[in-house]
Amino acid sequence: MDSRVGRALLRLAGVSLVAVALVALVAPRPVNVAHRWQVVVPATVALVVVAALVRVPGWAKGRGAALAVAVGGGAVATVIGLMTRYHYGWDARVMLDMARLLQAGEPLRAADYDYLSLYPNNLPLLAIDRAGVAVAQAFSLAPDAVLIPLNGICVTVTLYAVHGLVARVAGRGPAVGAQLVTLVLVGTSPWLAVPYTDFYAMPFVVGGVALAARALTPGARRGRIVLWVLAVVAVAIAYAVKTTPVVIAVAAVLTTVVALFDHGLAPERRARVLAACAASALAFVGLGVGLSAAATSAAGVDASRLHTEVSPPLLWWVALGADEQRGAGGVVNYGAYSRPMVDAVDGASQEQMRAYAAQFLADRWDERGLGGSIAFYASKTAWNWGDGMFWAWGEGPDSLPGTLAPATGPTAIVHALNGFEGDAYPLRADLTQALWLAVLLVAGVGLLRVPYRRETLLVAVSVLGIAAFTVVLQGRSRYLFAFVPLVVALAGLVHAHVPRPARRRGRPLSRSSR
Image 1 (cartoon, helix red, strand yellow):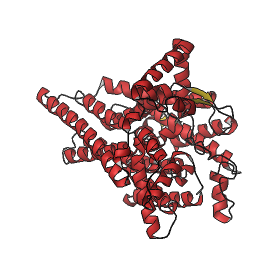
Image 2 (cartoon, rainbow, N blue to C red):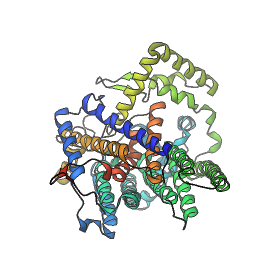
Image 3 (tube, rainbow, N blue to C red):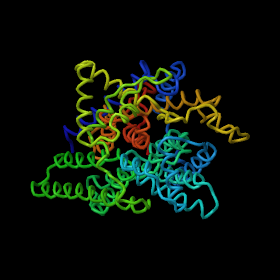
Image 4 (cartoon, rainbow, N blue to C red):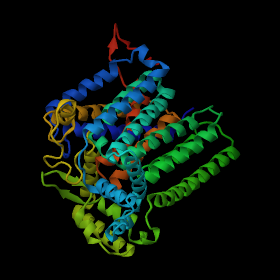
C-alpha cells in the first residue's frame, strides 16, 4: 500500500527536523542556558553513531522489560522531583496558591477571578492542584509532596505508552531504546519539581496517539472502534488539561483522510469513514466542553464570577507569537510571553483586543516585510526546537540565585546536576542538548527514507502540528515538552531506516532489532 500524500508529509517532517537540528548545531539561537558547541557538536555526532550501530540486547526485549523501565523510570523521576523541590513562581505558584485558599474554605479574591477570566484554560490545573492539596492535608504533607509524585506517575504511564507505540511498528528493541531516551529527556528534567500541565497532559498525549495508531493499523479489525473511541477520549483529556494537544486531533483526522486513499476502498465505505471522522471531531469538541465545565466544578470556583469575554481571542495569541524581545542576558525571545502586550489589552473587550492584534501584526509586517518575516519565523522555529532543556528554570524568577536550598548527600548531587546554579549543570545541559539533537537527526533522516505507513504518518503529522502551533502562536521550548516523548517515539519508529556503515566487504549491518 502506498500514498504519495503520506510520503510527502513524512518527507516534510524529515526535512524540518533535520533542518532545525543542523541550525542548532552550526548557528544556534541562544536560550536561557548557554550551550558550548565544543561539547554539544561532538557529543551529538557520537550519539548519532551510537544510535546507528548499537542494538538493544535480547535480554532487554522481554515482555517485562517495558513495564520495568516504566515503573523504574517513574520512581527515578519522583525521587529527582522531590529532591529538586523549590519555591517556583509564575502560573504554577498562582494556581497552587488559589488551590490552597479554596481548600481552606476561603473565597478567591477579585484579582484571582480576573486571572481565571483571562486564562480559563488554567481551571483544570486548579482542579488538579486542589485535589492534591486535599490529599496532602489528609496526610499532613506539603502539596508538592503529593503533586510531584503525580508527575512521576505521569512519567510511568508515558514511558509505557511510548513502548506500546514503537513496539508494534519497529519492534521491542527500538521501543526500549525510546523509553530510555524519554526517561533521560523527560524523567530527569528539572521540570519534575513543578506541578504543571506539561506532565499532566503527557500520558494522554502519547497514549492517545498510541491508541489511534493501533486503530489505524491496516487489517486490525478487532476492537478498532473501541480503540478509536479511547483515543478520542484521551486526546480530549489532554486538550482539556493543556491547549496544545488539539494538534493531535487534527493530525488524526488528516491521517485518516490520507489512509482512505492508500488502498482500494469502495466509495461508500470511504463515505462511512469520513462520517466517522466528523462524528469523532464533534465528540472531541463535546468532550472538551464537558471536561472544562467539570474542571470548573471540581475546582470549586464561582462560575458566575468568571467572565470569559475578557479572554484574549485567537488573533491576539498570533500577535503575541510575532513579538520579539531581548532579555536581560541578551537572549532574544521569539514570540514568547510579553508583559507589555498583556498590559496593553488590560480591561479591553475582545473586539478591542482583535483591533490591537491586527494593528500589531500590520506594524510587524511593515517593519520586516516578506523576507524579514520569513527570517523571524525561521529563527523562532530554531529557537523553540534548539533547546534540549526545554526552558527549564526559564519561567518567572526561577533562575535567581539561591532558588534551591543548601543540601547534602544525594540531594546535593541532584542539585549540582539539575539546579540552574549547579556546578555540573552546564555539562548536564550540554549533553542533554546533544541527546535531543541526536533524536531530531535520527528522526529526520529516518523520515527521509521510511516507506509510508499510517502509524508513522500519524506521529509525524502530530509533530508537524506542534511545530506549527509554536511557530504561529505564543510559544517557547517548554511548549514542546509534553510532545517530547512523541518525537522520541518517532525516532524509534524510523530508526531502522537511518543509513548504517558497511561491515565486512560492503555487507550492511543487520537492521534486525526485533
